[in-house]
Image 1 (cartoon, rainbow, N blue to C red):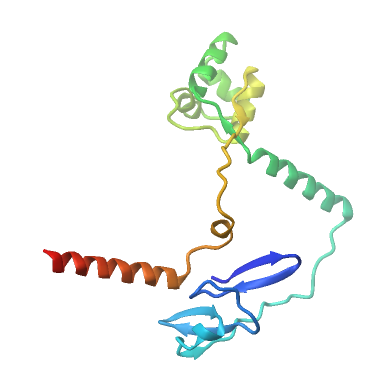
Image 2 (cartoon, one colour):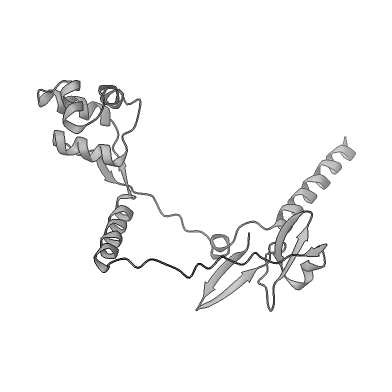
Length: 189
């Protein structure tokens, strides 16, 4: 997979073998059956060139009314905001106590929110975790808070590690160094 980085508006390609930034035209070669984008030096390791398949540009498209487009973007934004929430601990106990406090049976609660009794039973027993939509229904029906913002501690990482993955060259180096280590251990015994 080719890594692309946008640095001040310029897209820089990264060699799939050695990890260096590709200066000039990238070479697309086949190395041991894998189609890779490489720099000029690593292209010598390949056996044949390959060309990327052109993307099918379908120029015929359907125009949508402007009000539909606005609704879609509004839904997408609210969906993105909900991705950062999670269900609280002991949600089953909270649901059970709130249901009993409201004087509802599991069947009544199931009918009220449009879910099967078995789902309510499994939620109260914490055998399943309710998805966000179901948790919202339970919050509304029982007047409790089940969803809280997801708090993840930020772990700072070095700049070089966050922007690139492991290259094939690094994997080969690791395998080679491991092989040497095993040979040295065998010779010492």
